[in-house]
Image (tube, rainbow, N blue to C red; front, side):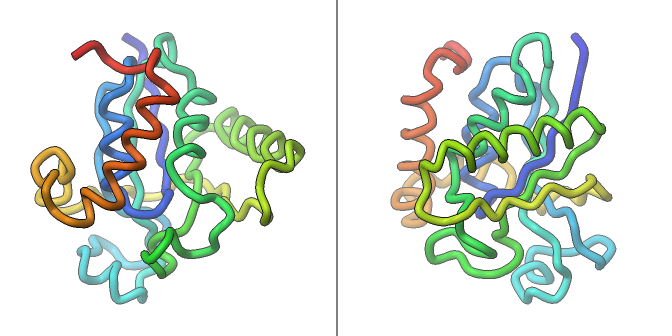
Length: 179
């Protein structure tokens, strides 16, 4: 199996990780941090807003089973890409919308998808998703990995994560792994 990596930031990483893990062709989805200036940041560092890292999910996938463009389609469904440095009540630069590209082809594809979304004029505000070169990825602490699956009754998971997961699963049903 050929492997490729995509790194995406769209607010809280619990939502994005949960959905990407359920897609056929995705080998792994790891919550973490990227785009800041502090080496080895912790969740507490990120929440203080001083590191400039974003909460991201690094997705390892088989491009023969699911394309980068398909991953971007799921990504843009999972969050509000018109909100600068926030997602709903989650506010701060760590919650920004960003695509961290690993190859020039990914950069071009991300820019094309954003241009297509903007041209479609489906949104009341401009798309603020940043497109930046991938830098060092720092995996988040172990308790963040698979958080939704381990804590489905937690209020944030019930009221924020679960609806996003349900929306993505309904829209991309044909791309999900068989149970």
